[in-house]
Amino acid sequence: MKINLKNYGECECHLPSLAICYDIVSMWSGNNDRNVMGRLCALSVCVAVNDKGFPRYKVSNIDPIGFGGQCLEHLLNVGIPVNDILESGLKLVTWYATSLPSESEVKEQENFTEQQPVEALND
Image (cartoon, rainbow, N blue to C red; front, side, top):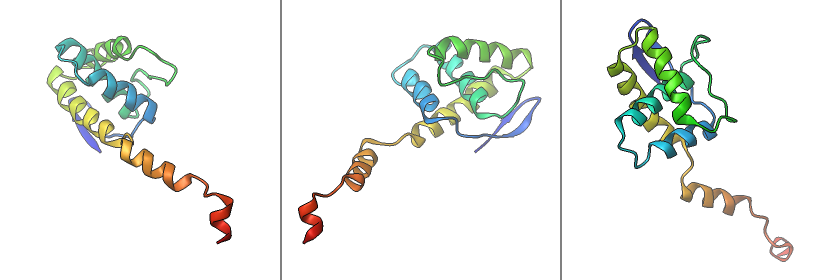
């Protein structure tokens, strides 16, 4: 996926770990606070764009909103407009949500990997 950021142009985005995707998507779901959504959008941008100057979020972090504030501060300081952050972040949050395994996919995988009883294999 690609996003367009002022001062950076078109950026190729990489899917972060599924744990990070889950952190962002779960904090996003049901949240209507504009400031929280802005922080999560900024975090989504920073974890997707491979730029050494961007803050790095690790799976061991447990405060996506707080870290998103650091990301928002950084992106604003390098001249990326709020609108670009929100637009790109929303696109990325949607991408992360679709990347997470659904319940039906998990059940399908469980059924596939379950070992059959030895009696069934001998028939």
